[in-house]
Every structure is written in structure tokens, then in C-alpha cells.
Length: 423
Image (cartoon, rainbow, N blue to C red; front, side):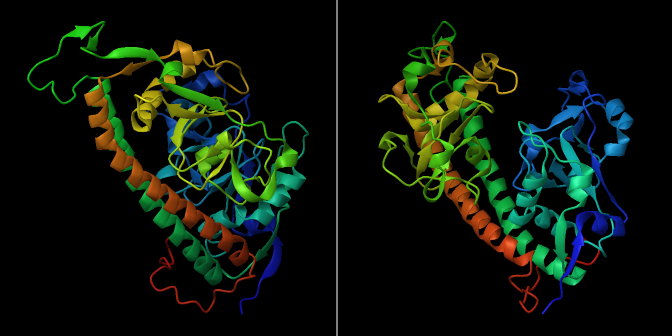
């Protein structure tokens, strides 16, 4: 049986020759210093911390001179970044590809470089354990916007095994994440193929039947095609206004924006009762539109749940298909975003659905597109659901193995253990 000792995160980081440091404040990194240049240096902020990893698609960037000025906040592989305000508990591991990126405003950096004291992947999983997240939430200061600082984080209580056990624990949990990452790459490939096909047919108008020459066009559209307001392409049902008193631990999950972006988790509230009409139930494959906060269009991949407010469930009209409408709405997101209002929580009004128009093809083209992309969508949904299962198992294991309640010291890990010099 492995022996575990009591310590604090601050003491551990000091012994590892590191530090705990907040990212640059607004006075050091101004809004006008961000750039649209895809070659800029990425800045990791709380919004980019999803399921313990960096969501690359959402990161903002700054030019190299700005990054050089903020060189004290440059990240190295093995660091862990935390959200220090707002959504306490968000965190992300800095891998080899994120070295040199910046710890952003609203974030906090854990730098513990000596792997003989703390194995970096183990630190990552420890900071995501429910006990640590709950402790941080309980210590955060501020009523409207909870905040952490370096001193609070340094006081995090830890139970720590020897480094060999740390490596074994991290190896088990990492195996799940590697399978998830493989599936995510397959999902990305499937979605890229479907998006490319949509752009080819409905943006460039190179669809089957045009090979022998361009068809006649009306108002820039192929013959027989038309434009239709989004509101006429389907019904947009706004979610149910659940109250915190409705939130429980049993029953179907309540699907919020957080679940659309990160999947279901132990923190996902659930509802038991019969007061919510069945029209608010969401099944796998249903089309959902997040119209507040983070605008986005999704096909729900997981178990049946209830639709929360700030989300639309979109059902296409009888002459259209879910597959086509999904891509049409994704393509129209820039137009919706241009109509978004608000500063702290941007949202669109329902009137935007009548203002944004979608290009509707002829029936034969629509059916051909649906036949082509439906298998891609179905395979993607299967893989997304598999990832949800893997995350659920990992998240059940995590609090048990990082606290020693589940001893894996005698478990044969085969080839899961990395080399000593590999974090």
C-alpha cells in the first residue's frame, strides 16, 4: 500500500522549484493589443479551458512584441493554468504544442518544473478533482464575480503519494484522454469533410450537375434556388426556464451552454418531475442553437435531456432536412454574430431569425447533400457519445485514484507508463 502525505500546493510548488502566479492584469494587456493575425502568440484565458485541455479554436492572440513584453507570463510544457475568476474550477494542461503561449488575463499559472517532486500530468489531474474544485470555489472571494489569487491557490490542501505512484495514476487517466483525443481527431476529419462539401455545393455552387457548364442564375443563385429567412426554414423553440430549485442529481440532464461545449459531467444538473412539457426534451441528433453568450450550432450527441433557456431546439420544415439546416446555420453564424447585442453576455434577438437569410437549393440537390453527409454525421455522433462514456469513466476514477481511495499500486499497467524523462 502506497503511503500518502499531507501537504499544500504552495509547499509542493516551492519544493519543485516553481511558483504560482496570476496572468497579466488589464492594465498590462489591453483589448486593442489583441490581433486577428493567425500567426500571433496565443493567450490562454478561462474561456479556452475545456475539460482539462486548451480549446485551440477559441484562443485570442497578440503580436510577438506584445508577447515579448509579457515574457514573464510565457508558459512552458507541464504548466497548469487555472481560471482565477468567474468559472472557478476551469483548468488546462500546457502540452508541448502550447509551450511559449501566454497565461492570459483572468488566468493563473502553476509552474512546478521538477518532475521528481510532482509529475506534471498528475498535477493536472489533481487540480481537476472534485474535492480541489469544491475547495477553490469555497475559498474564492467576491459575490458577483468569484476570484482567486496566488495565496488562496497556494493554500490548497493535498494528499500526495510518491512520484512512482503519481506516474502510475497519471498513466491510467491519460489512457482515457488519449482515446478521447483519437476520437476527436476522427470527429474533426468527419466534420471537415461535411463542411467542405457544404462550401463546395452551397457557397461556390459547384454541385452535381454543374460539371458541363454553369446553370442559369437568378440574383446570383442557381436556377430553382431561393433565399429564405432562417425563421421560415424551421421552428426555433426556446428552452425551459429552469430554476436552481429544479436542479437535482437524478433524472435526465438539463442541457445548458456548458454541456454543449464540454459534454455532460458530474456537475451537470438533472431534473425529476412532470412539470416540464415534453416538447423541451432533446434526443440524440437533435439540432440545437446557442443564441446567448457563445453563439453556436450543435447536433446533440448524448443521452436524452431537457433544453435549458438561452438555447433553441431547431426542427426543420417538412421540405428541409436536419443535415442541411445544421450546415446552413453554421454558415450563417457570422451574420447572426453581427446582430448580437450586449457586452458581458452577447445574445441575438428572435428578430435576427427573420433578418438572416439561408440559401435553399432545389429538392434534388438537397436530397443528394443529405445522403452524402448523413453517414458522416451519424459516425460523428457515435464517436462523440463514445467520448462522453470515456469521460464519465475517467471522471469516476479520478477522485478515487488521486486521493488514494482506490489503490492501483499492484495493477499491471503494461505499456501505459511513459519513460522517466517524458511528462
